[in-house]
Length: 113
Length: 115
Image 1 (cartoon, rainbow over the protein chains, first blue to last red):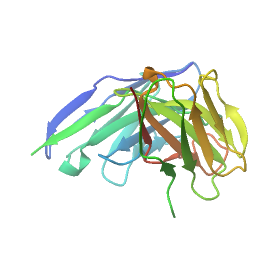
Image 2 (tube, one colour; image 1 turned 30 degrees about the vertical axis):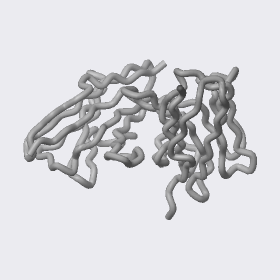
Image 3 (cartoon, helix red, strand yellow; image 1 turned 180 degrees about the vertical axis):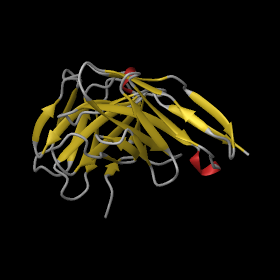
């Protein structure tokens, strides 16, 4: 069975600083990888996903994640964060050929002015 | 396009009582999911429907939880009787096609507190 580990439960950073949210997964077969974001008082929404092709995927609001098969990682990065990025971020994995998502425990990103 | 709707948004009950949650997915979405999110944890899939058939209910505690999607559209999740450890946010999600890698669209959730 697959599993997802988000190594940091909370990440505080200053505004305009870079940030990396770490995600490692465990699976014996090929997977698809996702980052979902939950802004305060809102539902989960997709930030970005890796299905195939280029291992670097980007979101429309400046986040990017890189699939690293050898390290079984899918870390999320942003070079300069804004107050509006304050949210909880969830890494998730699904088996290729299945729709079921397995989520990590989440990382709460707080941005200090 | 309207999003996934859930009701109620909040529910407080006493242990051993029953409770039901309702979900209306995005129009045309064939797949519907119910997740349980306990405080401090990521969402955990309880059940997945494809139209009105069950695809995966391996993590549904069937002695107390039940779910149905009678006409392949909206769905209800029921807990009877509730236990203290059922306190959580119950999330409903839907996706348009039966294919791996499809984006799941989540509703706002129902926050349940069992006293």
